[in-house]
View 1 (cartoon, rainbow, N blue to C red):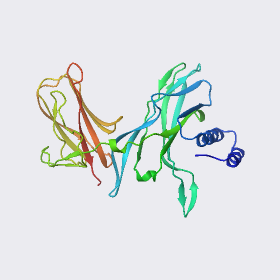
View 2 (cartoon, rainbow, N blue to C red; view 1 turned 90 degrees about the horizontal axis):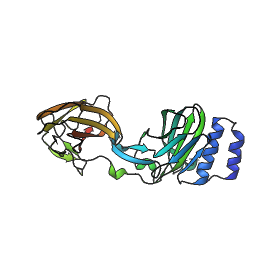
View 3 (cartoon, rainbow, N blue to C red; view 1 turned 90 degrees about the vertical axis):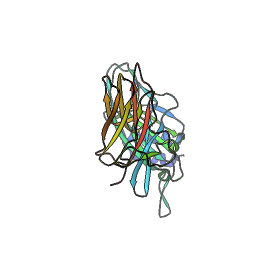
View 4 (cartoon, rainbow, N blue to C red; view 1 turned 180 degrees about the horizontal axis):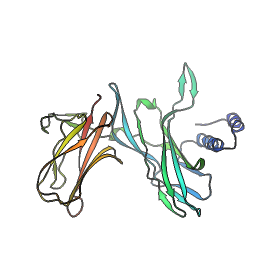
Length: 304
């Protein structure tokens, strides 16, 4: 990954001394430096630091884009911290870009040295003067192995205060964990939670007990519009929480019983309206003097 001096000179000559100019300088440095994790600041009052290894991907469920096209939803986990060493608060915006390292080719000609996989803008809110905070806003990125065209993935993060770029981070995503996505959902009908088959094998432990809490498979599964989820409580619980995840860090729906949950058999409904086709995960967490563990189960939302 390199950029020659002639191209650099032309690019610098063409761009004005504006935000575009500053970002162009970063782009040149990024491609010239290669794919190792690196950070850079434009404002001496802002420090951007990598935490445990820097940005990485964590796999969630399938995204069904068409009858013959599936991908995986990932959390892009920053593992970065921001320090505001100035005397005033900063309202920061994060621009995340993921790119494949494979050039774009059209009619036998290279039209670009990369192709964009994802671009997302996230409002980070206000970082108070003197504060250091973890960058905890995680964009969801969706792509398949075929989208990479045999290449790797690099990221670029630009932090902006208004329209002014103040810090940058760049590097390679070391591994793409396609293998750790949600999988293995229990096929059921509208009639009952009785398991009929396991699809999208292998099963990864759906609907297992958590302590004394015993969930039943969701039904129907696949489900459109809504789905029923049952559970048995053999001893009184302090509280119970059920969450529907698209990725490990993003909750779409929640069931929260924050009062005493008595002994009995229960049935709840999860609204699936507006949820895109794909595979999602329900995680139950029962509490009795603290959490008793978790139990998960996957739900498939099919194409219309």
